[in-house]
Image (cartoon, rainbow, N blue to C red; front, top):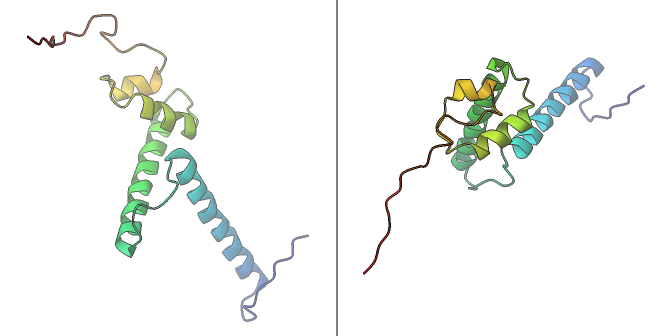
Length: 120
């Protein structure tokens, strides 16, 4: 048996329970943001700054969820976010990598031609 206390005496018990359930979903969402996107603090303190950061995080989570659902690999969301962060500057096809993350990128065995730094 679960007992919920409220000072909203005009609302019914099922309405109060739904409000708590929705509030818990919001808490889980912010927990996922903090864990997967490394959002520990807000960058700004104005209402506009908070909205921008929350909308950006929402877009990032949606992209991650889309990649997770599109993949045949069976990613956990946290693993996908971490490995994407590590491979951000690796040149390879995202769609191939999402299904075959353990394969080396094409051309990984060849030497990258670099300019030599010489000084006189």
